[in-house]
Structure formats: C-alpha cells, structure tokens
Amino acid sequence: MKFKHTLKTAVTGLSAHKKRSALTILGIVIGIMSIIMVMSIGQGAEELILGQIRGMGSRTMSIEPGRMPQGLSDMYEIYTESLKDREVEAIKNKNNVRGDNQVAPFVGFMETVSYQDEKMRTMINGADKLWMNIMDVSPEQGRMFDDTDVKQMAKVAVIGSNVKEELFGESDAVGQRIRMKNYNFEVVGVLPPVGIIMMMDVDDLIVVPYTTAQKILLGISHYHAILLEAETEAMVPDIAEDVKKTLRELHNITDPDKDDFHVGTMEEAMDIISSVTSAMTLLLIAVAAISLLVGGIGIMNIMLVSVTERTREIGLRKALGATSGDIITQFLLEAIILTIIGGIFGILLGAGFSWLIGFGIRRIGGFAWTFFFPVSAVVMGIGVAGVVGLVFGLYPASQASKKSPTEALRYE
Image (cartoon, rainbow, N blue to C red; front, side):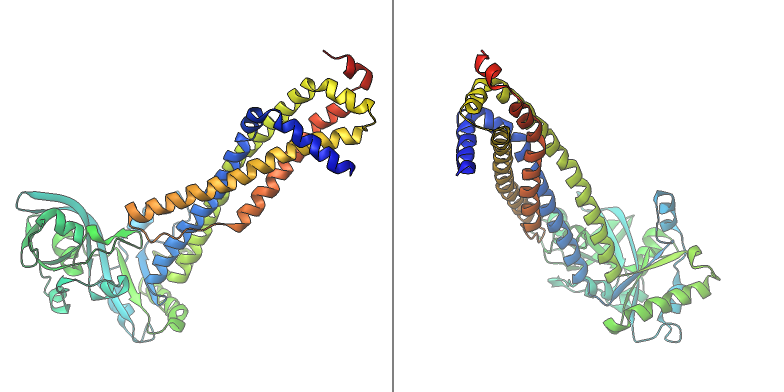
C-alpha cells in the first residue's frame, strides 16, 4: 500500500509539470529511436545484400587478381595483371580442377556511349552467357550474344532498360548501332527492367563479349575476374582449393601469403558481409547511445531542480511520517517513469521512421527492401531506459532524502 501511495505521488508530481516532463524525456526518445532505426535499417541492408548474393547461386565463385586486401595498404594489389588466358585454360582443365564446371572471364569499366546526338556514361561489362546465367537475366527484346560472337570478338551489345530509354527513347533499339571508343556496336538485345543485382544497376549496364571488351575496347591482355560455376554445391570447397593449387603452381608460389590472386565463394562473401554490417551496426548503436547519456544527464538536472522546487513538499511528507527511503523511492520512480515513457515513444517513432525509410528505398531506389522490427532492440531500449532513469535519478533522490523536515518546511 505504501509503495502504491508513493507511485501515485510520483505520477502526480510529474503531471503537475507536463511540458517540463515532455522536454526532459526528449533526449531519451531520440536515443532509443536512433537505436531502433539503426538496428532495423542495418538488418534490412544486410538481408538485401545477402539476398542478392544468394540469388547468384551457392555454386558460384569468383577468382580475382591480387591477394585479398587486409587493409588500405593492400588495395593496390587488386589491380595486378595475374589473370590471363593461360589461367583461364588451366582452370578449365579437368586434370587441374575437378568437375564439369563453367568458366568465364570478366572485365568491367566505365565508358561514354552515344547514339546519334545522345550520349551517356555508363558501366560496360565484358562477359558471356555464364555471367547472364549467374545474374539470372536475359534479353526481353532481341537475343544474347553467343559463343561465336565471343570467339570472333564481335562488336555486339546487350543494353539495359535505362540505356535503351536514354539513347533511343521510344524507338526500337535492336538492330541499331551505338558508338564506344570510335567503334560501332550493334545492339542485339535489350534487358528488362530488373533494378539492382549484387549492388550493380543492371538497367544502366551494357554487356559485350569479354574478348571484345578486353582486346578492342581496353587493349589489355588480362582479366578483371574469372567467374566459375561449380558442377554441384557440395564440390565448391574442393574446387576452390583446386583453383588455388593450380594458380599457385602456375605462378610458382609456395607461400600462400604471397598469392597474387584470391578466390571468393558466395558463402565467404555472405560471412564477410554479415561481419561488416554487424560491426557497422554496433558502431552506430554506440554513437546513438550518446543521446541516451545526454538524455540521462538532462533528467538528472531537471530532477535536481525539481528537488529544490519541492523542498517544502519533501519537508511536509517527512513531517507526516515519510522516511528517507520513501523519498528516495518517490524521486527514483519519477526518473524511471520519465525514461520508460521516453523509451516507449522512442520505440514507436523508431519503428515508424524505419518503415518509412524502407518504403522510400523500395519505391525510389528499386531495392527489394524488407522491413525488420528488432524485438531485441525493443527489450534493450526499455531496459536501457529504465537503467538510465535509475542511475541518473539516484543522486537527486538521495539529495531529496537528506533534507531536514524542519529546514524544508521553513524553505521559501
């Protein structure tokens, strides 16, 4: 009964200053809201990226030049010219790499393309049918270039829907010729609008035979990557080891730490993405937690002011028999109630803004975004809010309990 009376007194004290109470909890609201948004958007982004990686198939791997960067000082190594035709042929050789696997070189670069008076700068991918199969896209108009086009270094191109719209408008693009680096390319196919795949905007893409891109457009003898699709998912780890062994023998490398290439599987890519997004989410949560600290200090300051303003009330309660423990409980309850109310509003606002941001990303960005409402963040938000109220309300409550009833009643 005594606790019920103390709780009622705390609620009455807060109700007497509604505007001040609302402003007091603003820091808590912002802090909890930020944590909810960071966790929700972080999970949504992670699921988006992982979903796109899964869409490429668990049998896919990529061999890229340079060792896997361990830091900024290693980034230059990704530009090494360690992957050439002999590496492609060695990987295709079943005596080196087990299984009936699909192998295709890949090059990618930015280039300005034009059609009549229209120009645009966009991404050019030098690839073949395997790349299309991995990306799970195919032309909705015209055709995909074939192996003959690749062997003959044909000047043919498959363009994305935005490229078609930018250069040709409503006119038919198939059969027309676009210009790249003073060469005319026949448009043989137009891709449907598919948006972002593996963080690549396929709608703004032009795909040409990798031989054409490598020899004619770039004039290089190496590749930017080699794509490999394993015969079965179970064989992926063994094939990855075969590839590493083959390339090390080809490059006379005995120390794996000196590899001038790296092999990435989809499983490894998903592990890396999960680790990176989790680390970024924790970092952002730590930043958002600063708002909770500021909010807690704000609550402590306001509670100290409240203690001073209500000195006579404290004296009256003590004169009527209230103990120091009752006074501490009352002011602690006021602080905890403020922070929990702030936590509830922060959770609601965080969920609402997260949903709106996800909706905007889906509608404007074209991403297949999934809204997540992190229950763990809700539990953490309410728990942290309560702890903040307890910690930052303890000192003002202690100060209130130490006031002498006689001096408090004389206070003006």
